[in-house]
Image 1 (tube, rainbow, N blue to C red):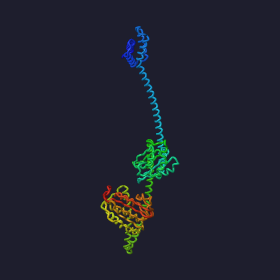
Image 2: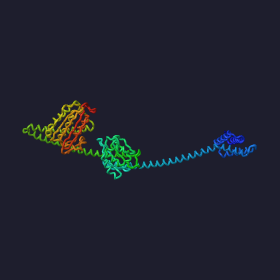
Image 3: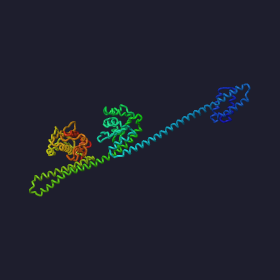
Image 4: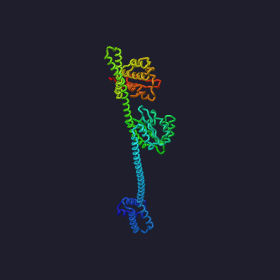
Length: 544
């Protein structure tokens, strides 16, 4: 189709004349095509009106009178409308596109406004979060006292991110201790005091117990009755949790150096505050700061305790070493005086003095050996010389060596052993174990009987030693095998507090163990268990 003005005008006039003279659908289609071509070439509606008026004027000046004027004008008008149809479609498309663009712009503006609001909200939350963590860090660092710091850990979370906060600390013996329970509402004090009675049980599979074992946070956005039942330890505990009306909960670990040190439980009682990933992220960040503060406080506490322990040990060691040294000095002085008068000094008296000197020398050597053993054990350098050993023979040898001490203490010893017990052990170290246990029984059970039994249940040698002395208080039993530990008065019974520690270390090096049960004032029983079949993998041959 022609697209320039002149060509279009000529073709339009010819087509109009043809349609007015002999109307037909094909000519109307031609009118539509002419209009579409004009629109495509940039000719507008006003230009089309001009083209039509020129073509219609020429047509009226030359038409034959046989066609009525009204008919000519009607047909010309129909032709013109058809030629304008493409313009109408294009205009409608423009209108629709414009409306669509307006709607899109409005939507984009709305989205932009929402994004701006969200961005401002994020900035505000970031500022609030940073301010909260900064204040939390300040409070946590305000004291190096471990108990004060532990209390602060739970308190900084209330009420900013929790209505109730609970801190559980993992102790050295893989047991959890409930350190503190903080709350917003003072009216919750009775319930929180009840919660303090329920530290996590490590065998549980949910809640703080799970986090303490796995080191992975737990998020419960909507707390339901089944979850409360899963963490409750008994009906009273469940009732307490139900009364708290906890709506949302999260537990985050306190970890340092790849090891879990504790767990922080945060509870929300408000229906409007449901914990999600953002709150969990904040809680984990707080837990990191809390763990750092607790570790600093713990290290300071341990350093102070180490200094105190060192001072106590030096005082004890000085006392224990001074006694045999004094005896040695007195014996040597006495011996010197006697040697100055050999003519009146009977040999038997000299022999007794020399025996006393030898005894005190052995006592000093034993103390030094114990100190050296503790050093080796502490640095993992205890070496065993393993061979075929009869445990019954070891027991009898130790009893023979301590027969004088047994007699002097007034202790009657009985041994129940029906057979020899063989195993691959270090004989000298087992003598050390039996000696330490028996001297312990003699010291604390003076004047009372001592029973030793030896059995072999299921390939395990079991040595049981019972005395009927002062016993061990229940609260001290978990610590009796620690270094420098004493369950009784130092000044009454003496000792370096190393004997039972060495017993445990030697037995564990053999793959065995030692346990104790005691009823103060009645009896104390130590049970030693050693594998008979084979030496432990950690066992090695070598010199001491």
